[in-house]
Length: 190
Image (tube, rainbow, N blue to C red; front, side, top):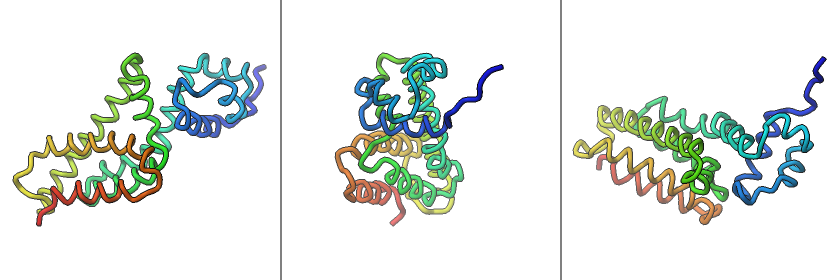
């Protein structure tokens, strides 16, 4: 009869998010992963198989537990209010640390097709969400009628990526909030 696991998988994955954000994939050594997740090495390999497979599970957890609530604002589609709320919460999530998914795309995306696919799907989802919110904002007269919605959505998506990287450098300053205000001010109706 199989024994019941003596660990909380969600807690293990949450703790591992911090390790990978702090050190990246290549810098995260197994001894620290084991120590900070309260896993034992044998159990780790039985549960996940490899460090790479573990990373995929950690990213999946990060997306569902941390990114999903933020991206959901775009999918609620309340025009510019949704875009503003997305950026407020995204900046709060990444400030001083960066975004695990974007960090891994930056570090591994060129060589790892799974990471590249996860990143592409996420960015496509953001862009579609931004387009929907911009369309709603246009209907409500919140933004200038002459803007190209698709290119503006692509620009917003690109800013998300840049914010994720800049968040590490900006630390806890207000740079990202100021940048968001300037970015959205450019599309708002005067």
